[in-house]
Amino acid sequence: MNSLVCSSPFNLEYKQLPAPELTAGNAIIRIKNICICGTDLHAFEGTQPYFNYPRILGHELSGELVDADAAPGFNKGDLVTIIPYFNCGDCLACRSGKSNCCSKLRVCGVHIDGGMVEYLSVPSYSLVKAEGLNSQQLAMVEPLAIGAHGVRRAGISTGENVLVMGAGPIGLGAAEFARIAGANVIMLDINEYRLRFAQNQLGIEKVIHAGNENVMTQLELFTNAEMPAIVMDATGNQEVINQGLAYLAHSGRYVLIGLQKKNLEFSHPEFHKRETTLMSSRNATREDFDKVIFSIKNNLLNPTAFVTEWIKFDSVKESIGDWLHSPNLVKIGIEMD
Ligand SMILES: NC(=O)c1ccc[n+]([C@@H]2O[C@H](COP(=O)([O-])OP(=O)(O)OC[C@H]3O[C@@H](n4cnc5c(N)ncnc54)[C@H](O)[C@@H]3O)[C@@H](O)[C@H]2O)c1
Ligand SMILES: [Zn+2]
Ligand SMILES: [Zn+2]
Image 1 (cartoon, helix red, strand yellow):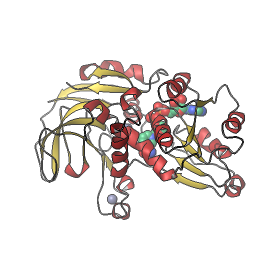
Image 2: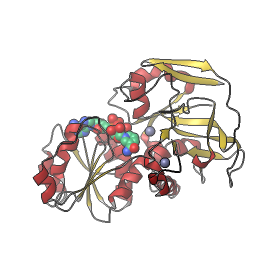
Image 3: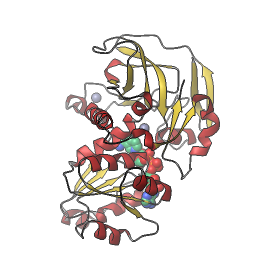
Image 4: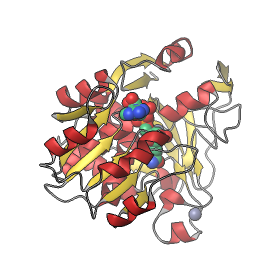
């Protein structure tokens, strides 16, 4: 079968590999669509921490079930996606229903080979049914589930002011689920294209260009001087994360979806006087995947609007360099057929 292997930073190679065979507890999927994640781009440019090469990238995927063992309720030919965080089922997090932060987590396409192949073997427990979504919509479920999880962690109620920092695919997804939860959503970024996308495609009217506007003044304006009850970071930028606490209302929740490598640094008195609830948000669980699928099915959001361009699998190698630092895109999708 054809595959695309990232053999070392900046090197992608199409390679013929043997197709996987069905083994106990696993399922074989014929891949139809894959969306490209920031993680894939970071792995390609060699900036993804703790990453080993060679690696086959890709975890935001959809496909047709070719064969499966131990997959009750699934049939050959079913359209499926996967929860690509393979967990041990055994540790405290897993036993508490938080398989998203399993202590031995292996993410498909990150720690083990992923979806840029014709056929992929995955644990049957990771399968998710299409529920009527098409394969392009299904390939967008995982990235949207990240934002859905952050919003669920935040426990947003109707009418609350929510600031989402970072209008990349992850932040835009978080903004969508905050909107669906009934929040007054404000988006902050420095990328004009993405802020316009949030306004024009997602209907998020309140946006702040952090490079051109005074963030505090705009937040006061948009929240009737109350400031956001919830601030969510989806920039993964250390300075933005350190600064974000200043935007939070007293009694607020600060949710870190974005990730960076250094220490967090806040003023303790600022943190204390708000009685801030600080939480990280890692990956997503089946509940979040179900929420995303339900929301798409009920036309609460349009996942394919996020995909700036669908390209053929054969063109990924020649095009990936163009996507690395392009300001004018949200998401790239791949067509395998
Ligand atoms: N929680 C999880 O499990 C999970 C999963 C996937 C990605 N992530 C993390 O989420 C973050 C966002 O992912 P993404 O794919 O959307 O990334 P992205 O790079 O596409 O988006 C980040 C956005 O932040 C904006 N930004 C950067 N610096 C800024 C600044 N100084 N002020 C305002 N905006 C700024 C950028 O313009 C960009 O639009 C990353 O840190 C990523 O590692 C977390
Ligand atoms: Zn991803
Ligand atoms: Zn575990």
